[in-house]
Image 1 (cartoon, rainbow, N blue to C red):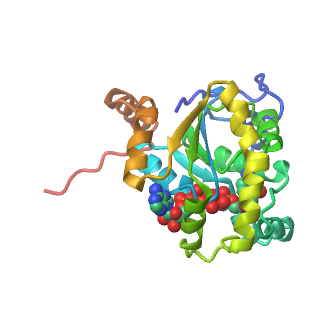
Image 2: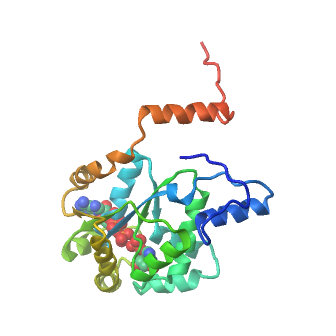
Image 3: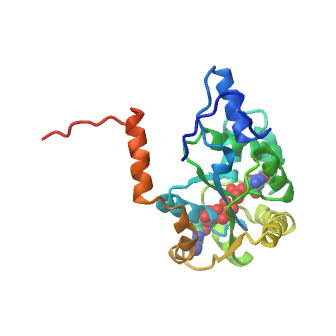
Length: 249
Ligand SMILES: Nc1ncnc2c1ncn2[C@@H]1O[C@H](COP(=O)(O)OP(=O)(O)OP(=O)(O)O)[C@@H](O)[C@H]1O
Ligand SMILES: Nc1ccn([C@H]2C[C@H](O)[C@@H](COP(=O)(O)O)O2)c(=O)n1
């Protein structure tokens, strides 16, 4: 991650993560230390409900050092936090509907802003064209590519009914609504990115390990080389953020 330091007042894109960081910095009377927005690497992870997005994201995080941001998890956390939007979000999720883009984008932007990482897997987003437009307007971030998990409905239904995580939307009535929303609202987003040549379609019907094997080549490019890791360590030591501790004999 770049540690470029910007003085308050440097030119930044309006409405971007940079702007938010800048204002936080100004509130605290310090110059913001952050990467320019264009340096953030974002991969959108799409696919029907139960296609295995979360399962694969966990593997990508472990192997390639991304931060996993699940839009659904962020919305569920918002319900549990008791914030003002909680009831509205809960009702929409129960109905399998898509929460207004401004709400979800705000949560994603906050999570990216609070992270030290610069590589994000954004899972279950953009769920519709409005999500996509709002994210673009607020952050200005163009995704590296889109990982699209392709899975037939009967297999997704079987997986969701067996998930057993106590989710209010993993019941047959809501699952059917979610499938319809996926076809009507989410597939057009995949279509948009297909036109841009950014979609990697993955056969999600195989075992989790086999699916991961087919994804790996797409992420090799993001793996830090040993020399990059060394440079970061030297920088960290120089900045006194890591202290050398004598090893006990
Ligand atoms: N390749 C696979 N084969 C069989 N079962 C799988 C596979 N991948 C995931 N599962 C199981 O299917 C269920 C749904 O997986 P997961 O939560 O990863 O899907 P998801 O796409 O993130 O779903 P949602 O969009 O509803 O959050 C889980 O119980 C998971 O263990
Ligand atoms: N961009 C998003 C993502 C999710 N939601 C809502 C509606 C979904 O049915 C629910 C669960 O999401 P999942 O965990 O299955 O990805 O959360 C939304 O409104 N907008």
